[in-house]
Length: 445
Ligand code: GDP
Image (cartoon, rainbow, N blue to C red; front, side, top):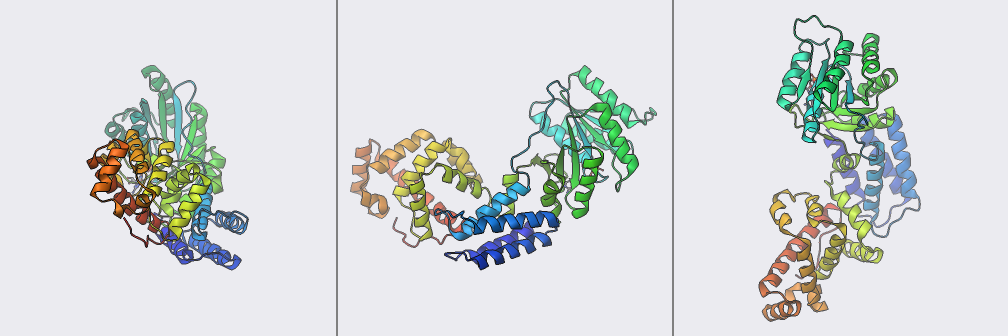
């Protein structure tokens, strides 16, 4: 969805990468480029204005970090502002104190409501809930049948009028479903309602009637992200007409420009709770503004990693380390030791490593690293001389034996550590590359 925007932003960051210092003119032209990229991505004008003025203000202001170079600082500010535009914190579902929790879905026809109902039900079931899917869309031919099929595929119960029973009143279906849920012990009721092709007073009235009958804990507006600006206007109309508590983005897998997805939170003031990314029931996830932003910026979860590292590293250590990377110096055993200690403070190492792009295939190795091993590694590095730590190529056979004896491990453990260090060194060079830092020039290892 955001490919074109991602490409544009990467290009803009690329053009300022080599600069040692950004002048006001640099900041202004970067802001202008970003503005253009957002408008081309069909982001609503008020959103673009807010976004750009925040970026300019923060980049010109005193927010200068010694740990980051100018390009990185801009990436950081853009990332933070993008997260803010997308809603900041992840907004979780509100559950009723007294079950069942009632979730009502609203939106235009074809937005993806019925599909979403099935996805949400499956996801909630996986989370240990027992949802009941309710077919209160009696308008669209086949909607009832579609919902029943989805419920079956999701392995959850459905509530719908019997075919040919003559029950044509969606408000009654919705009301009855709540009694049914209580009787059968369902803790969540998901009510799918009818949409129209456009805003229509009769549809709004029906949605209000259903809302009043079931008193929902959440009214989720499903917005088709492929539709663009119009979808955002519709979202506002539903917010005012029915009272929407949250938004679900559907069809994020499409190749539209993504402006609606980026505008809807800011324009409607309603949080985005979920995202739908395909036709299959599994193509669904909780919406995390921070992850979406890093995806748009094309940095995987690297930004999360930088943030965590920033939070934990000692200030001085961080500066020295960044400076080193910035100067293009290589990653040494000394740095490896610092990192081990920082990682140890951050909590389970596996989780951290798994966040790094491209680490999926290494899952097995990652799972085998434990915190005790970090302690052994620390002991081994501490048994090395400063010269050895700076230049691991010095560590020949007799030095390896000395280090093994000094740290109470076997030579093969020392060998393994050095092999792992080489891997890490390689990874750091790649990471430096991804962050816009030139790769290491001194390759003493
Ligand atoms: P409703 O009228 O709002 O209930 O919309 P539907 O749930 O029937 O969805 C309309 C069409 O969009 C169907 O063909 C769905 O398969 C498709 N659809 C729904 N969600 C997604 C999605 O996230 N990605 C894609 N590619 N298609 C979707």
